[in-house]
Length: 421
Ligand code: NAD
Image (cartoon, rainbow, N blue to C red; front, top):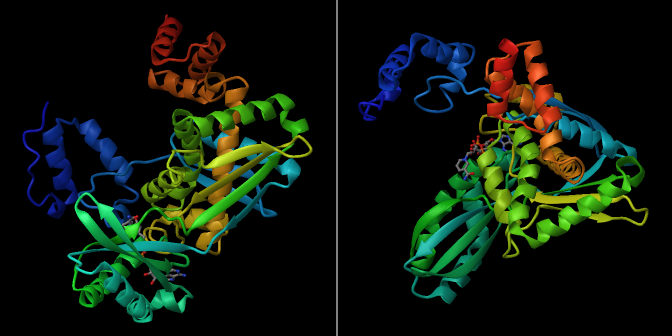
């Protein structure tokens, strides 16, 4: 039944039971369906209703632990929140194979985020630019006055850059504020600062500020991760296969997009588990992948002198261990505790290692048996469960589909019906 109207005044002010009642009528939900919403909200409604508006329930995700990670010589058990089967198993496997050569080596730049102020109505661009540069120190002091806690923690606005951009609405003066956001993801920090300095920039230039907002193209906040997978462990054929896959990804954006999707399987799972903003990380990753004017992979592979496979990943990672919901989400807090991270930079580096592990795992499967046999093993169990199979029925249907190389919802249903007979 189509909703009668989506115009529901002050839905946000309604009690929880009132919201459920309205939704029940709107979407023609049964009592059982309303019960599902209530059941999943039961443990955490108080917490989640402070995070977003108009809450009716909780959308849950499995939280798994990736084992075997050795990163810069330290052992890590890594929480991953992800709904896609095989992702966690693949990360564990790639991490295990990397241990033969010492695991992952990671490094990162300082956590510097960039905010933009778009200045319009400027008459003299050269003079405006020079004036802003003359007042640079004062602008930075002004920006830092908006977050004394950040400054006390060793961060703050550190620099600014200016560009005149030709746009389809004419030339514009863009001021880029560079802020070391320490252990925060930093978007709110930067937004507050650029809004705070905008009136002064208007006074200095005679123009007016339009957009004043953080950029998710976090090119100053980049993580590098590298690992070696030994030829004798993974096999010479896999080494060659991954190099072929790497070459295609650099030549072809169709492949690069899927190559990077494999990286983001791991990255997003840890980003979500730790209560971080995966949309921001995604936006940063893909804009970085296109920084050379062509959409390219975020990782690359080559053979070292011993013939082993070396994987390297480089990507921006704007994540925090304070701010956002990292401190208010109880599961995120636990995940940060499990990770034993002391800084946002350390967490970003771990996430970079997981991204590389995930990428290698996917490529290894692709160049060996192909995704359908490897990745779809667990997925076939999901499919069996979806058609109503339980317990041993699930394994029986999944095994049949895998052995037949035919993993689909239709086949799962047929096999289930066969079993029932
Ligand atoms: P936040 O607003 O909670 O700020 C973190 C605060 O923590 C800082 O203001 C600082 O004073 C304090 N702090 C204490 N100890 C610190 C330390 N060691 N290092 C750094 N800060 C410390 O969080 P945020 O990180 O500025 O913003 C993150 C949130 O912004 C996320 O929820 C994100 O979804 C959201 N957001 C994102 C965008 C975007 O990406 N485009 C835009 C708007 C909002």
